[in-house]
Length: 419
Image (cartoon, rainbow, N blue to C red; front, top):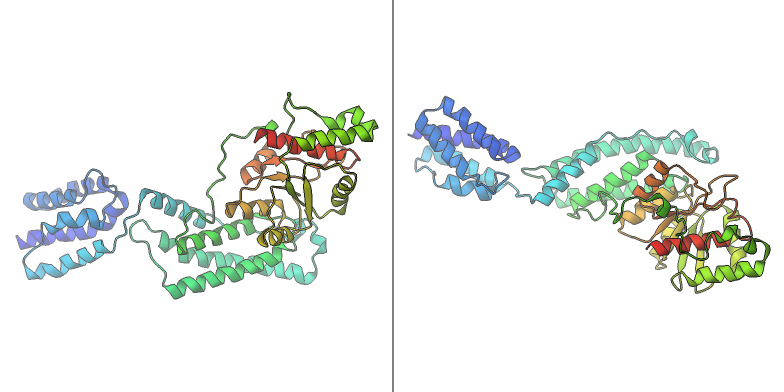
């Protein structure tokens, strides 16, 4: 009898990790295999004990589900006590993950271990010719160290995302890794201050460092939203801020009355401003002086009313510093290529901070383009939407005219109409 029990306990002890990973189906398969190798009585005892540990509602073998079933079979024989105690310790160490935690661990682990993107060569960067030789060398050094640091980060994080028994970092290990992440983030910020766009490798590194901070400090989903939550599917006309048929005034920048009469254009601007929320404070991110001069010219001409105001920033860093110091905005117009990482980086930072301030794409569409002309293909617009932009109001040839403010104001009016 003692020999039979040794078989049973040994089987349970060895099958525990497998059951924890795959659940009741593995237990049933193991029972069939056991029945072929053990005497019938021993097999029945092992099967009954194992199935007791796996009630119908349990999807994982845990200390809570397994110990009650096995405790019934605790042997009185001292030679089996040590083996049972080892099994009990193993079960006591198991962590019961909720379904939400298991999904989070799985998604986070998959995100961390997927292939790391290749860096973008310096000559493919916008305005790369402005880089000095030392800055190019620093660029390559950053990307070399980034790949090494990412491998190190993954090695630290993956054991903490286990199904059965997630590891833990000691407080001093946790603090050390947090300091290393902070230090590397400063290097990335320094590099981004010289870049006008965010490439895939930098975006991935920033995301994975935030994931590591989430895992270490139990902040699931607080730093990296898995996806941008959208209440409605992508609609191209809405995203392009095209004026609804019932809106008035409509296509004002094309109206000849506004073209040939500055007084009429001013009255149209006042009508559009009255249709906006009062005291709207808008940030404009663009490092092109011509863009800034347009807004300043319109402001001096009295084109903005109803409390509407614009504040200009020449880099992402300058804007983020202003927001951090306590100057929030109701809406953001951003260029795509702008120092400090570009428009995509701005969107990424704000959305990861759960800042839902509306952000409109406000880049130059190119020469020979006019207001409300489709600036890009639908795939590009949809990518902007999925990245986190809320609309597309590109600058164009009409923008750089004396009546360009009518185009901007109508786009803003259309945006709030759809809200």
